Length: 340
Ligand code: ADP
Image (cartoon, rainbow, N blue to C red; front, side, top):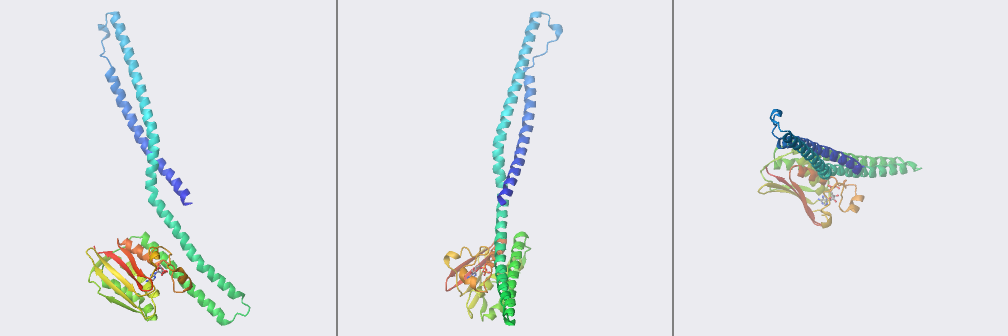
């Protein structure tokens, strides 16, 4: 579908470019023909001798023949000029077609890429939405076919449905946020780094307390950033949320900052599960979950969308988000944002 759409758009844009090139070439050829034609006439015209001065009939015949020859030469020159211009326009038609095609490809490339990314995203998102919905449906059907279904089993089933619905709700909210961040420009304002970090910590404190984890903010620089507050807080919350999720109970999570020449680094350090070296490059991709076997069984695991939102937010601020991690020892996620 994408390629059919792209090809018809490519042909249309190629045709438009070609028509423009041909129009310019035809206008130019017409003007050239007019000017050259006038020049030919001027160059070949002989000074008119008044008929009264042509007394000698032989002289009159020579002049007449000369005029005839000149007229013929002028006509031939015009025909040659026309042929040359026709050849030139045919050449421009062929080479212009090729140039138009290449130009059209270049023009449409970013649109094609965006369209492909959008289609991939829709396919991935619908797959992610379908999986829990199917699971929920099968579970509910099985419960309904249970002949001796008691109240507790029914309640358990309903509770499990609510949990799945909550997760689906979170996923759809995340997808909406992602598309908002990608499609709308972010309104930026001056905010202090510690204010951003404090807001994020406040949002996850309850979750950390449930796992008896302590979140310590250390060495927070006293700097201001020009950012979209809501989205940056959201990105820090995602990193903290993951640190909580993927670290054992009672472990410590640290938030530190570092001021560099042109940017500020916000580090979220955990002593959790860590991430395999070969998986680290993929965890920022949409719907990617490292160590999927673990995530398939645990309720706590998300949909692999949080880090891709964090990356989108960082990039919208001309910043980056990166990870250093050792399996079994922990991870450090770094959100780097430019100072100016
Ligand atoms: P999810 O909602 O699955 O956590 P994310 O996009 O936030 O999605 O993260 C992608 C994957 O990266 C996670 O599934 C997890 O395997 C891994 N991950 C992210 N943060 C951490 C962390 N602090 N420690 C260990 N693994 C992590």
